[in-house]
Amino acid sequence: MKLLVTGGAGFIGSAVVRQAIAQGHHVVNLDALTYAACLENVASVADDPAYVFEHADIRDRAALDRIFATHKPDAVMHLAAESHVDRSIDGPGDFIETNITGTYHLLEAARAYWTAQDRPQRFRFHHISTDEVFGSLGETGQFTEETPYDPRSPYSASKAASDHLVCAWHETYGLPIVMTNCSNNYGPYHFPEKLIPVVILNALAGKDIPVYGQGLNVRDWLYVEDHADALLTVLQKGALGRSYNIGGENEVKNVDIVRMICAILDTKIPKKTQYADQIRFVTDRPGHDLRYAIDPTRIATELGWRPSVTLEEGLKKTVQWYLDNEDWWRALQDREGVGKRIGKG
Ligand code: NAD
Image (cartoon, rainbow, N blue to C red; front, side, top):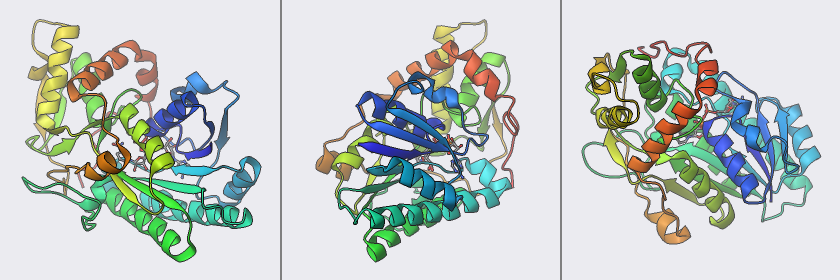
């Protein structure tokens, strides 16, 4: 297939781009190259004849129309977004603009292109979203595809709005969509403002390792390459108009995942004290969702998809990747806002 991937210079989008090329697809990577982007994430495929980069913003309708007309994609995989909850607390405007208005422009450009192509039913607009749209769970229960939306941060509210737009474009205009809502990802190329890279890099630098509140918030972690695999599976096998929850079957409290990473570093780069001694509990994020957990029954039973990497394996691979790729993360640590405590409200 020829795939138009938005946000393909980001963390998850770049994993999708690399995996799609490896599977033999053609990829047009559309990215505005915001602070969160890094073209090195796709350096391994940059010279592949099946890969093209388009520097464009999803809020720019004229650019979108040109890109659809030029490349004539068989499917769109829409990952471009503002994605950091803490940044959404300090500056929600960019989240409204990109995640809601940008998705609207992309839907309209896709609809115009699809209509001009005589509305092929095999065309797909795959919207990539998050489990955070479902809100916060208590001690028990899991999110299913039927869980009512209850977003609680500017980020998750903007993603929820974009999900509703995508469903509306399917119901109203018949645009052939699929949608996925995934749990927290981790792995190589994770931008150094997110929890897992912060833990690895602060531990290595001998700095405090900040843990919000008491570290009791639970997340369901998924290795990013598994997410990319799930997305390509849903794109090719998912039922028209259907949404799929994607999870890692790995529920862990934040403080426990931080301790797991510290224990891996104790083995890989031993020092006189333990890395866990650097953990510091800091002021919590306002409105911090307590627990996310995915019920993966639908994607497992209907599409036969399961995660392939255990949390222990994935964390070891991730830590090793950061040890092997210091040039990559050092360059990003100079970017605006990285390494500072933001999002305190
Ligand atoms: P990211 O922040 O690493 O990458 C986002 C990419 O989108 C960047 O390359 C950025 O330049 C690009 N972008 C931002 N605004 C743009 C615009 N206006 N026009 C064009 N490009 C723009 O994000 P990520 O963690 O890779 O997440 C990708 C998608 O997956 C997002 O939609 C996010 O909501 C969703 N998601 C993320 C997670 C997670 O754990 N990171 C989990 C579930 C779902």
